Amino acid sequence: MKDTLKHRGMRKNLAEIVAAKGVTDKKVLEAIKTIPRHLFLDSGFEDHAYQDKAFPIGADQTISQPYTVAFQTELLEVGPNAKILEIGTGSGYQTAVLLHLKAKVYTIERQLELFKTTRLFFNKMHYRPKKMIFGDGYKGLPEEAPFDGIIVTAGAPEVPRALLSQLKVGGRLVIPVGTDEQIMTLFVRKSEKEFEKKEFGSFRFVPLLEDKN
Image (cartoon, rainbow, N blue to C red; front, side, top):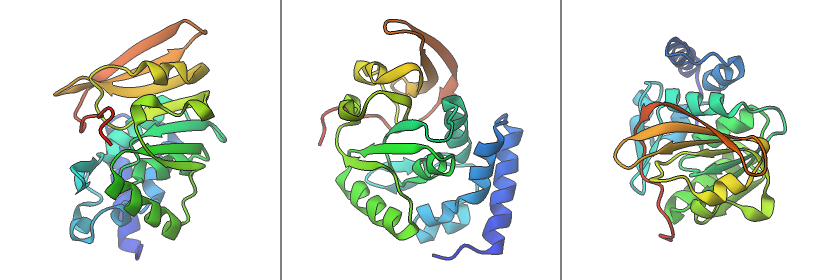
């Protein structure tokens, strides 16, 4: 579990690549520069950790491309103490980025094997989400709603209504929508009944599965 000067140099380069692709939020870029992404990957992949690529992490899941993580986080507009729901904990890299931004993070993972390993890893690294839950992200987390932001890290064939209903007025949902290829979509809750929707080009994610535990 080493983080060396070489790793830090590689992260600085990675942050520059992500910035060159259009991410401008300084706090998000700082998170990319700070968080030791190589520790979130199997040690066999360590050399690839600071490439701007997605990688397999077990249970048929992937750790998202750093640019995608940064892009989704920027769309979320995370302020300090923002209450954020993350659907798909995965390796925990996106969670760590949100924690770096001083968010209160509630995160849900539906793959038991991944849930267990990531929870142990968080303990070891002293990452402290408010809650880490094993369960179905489609349902969100009604008992903790409303949220300032909800981020979905898997492709959803359609937008789960439960997630929209759990946003605060003014809250933001960032979700990749589609089956084979996804369109990154932002919903901003304007009032009890009204949502503004914006689309931001295509991405590829593993599918968000419903009721498969």
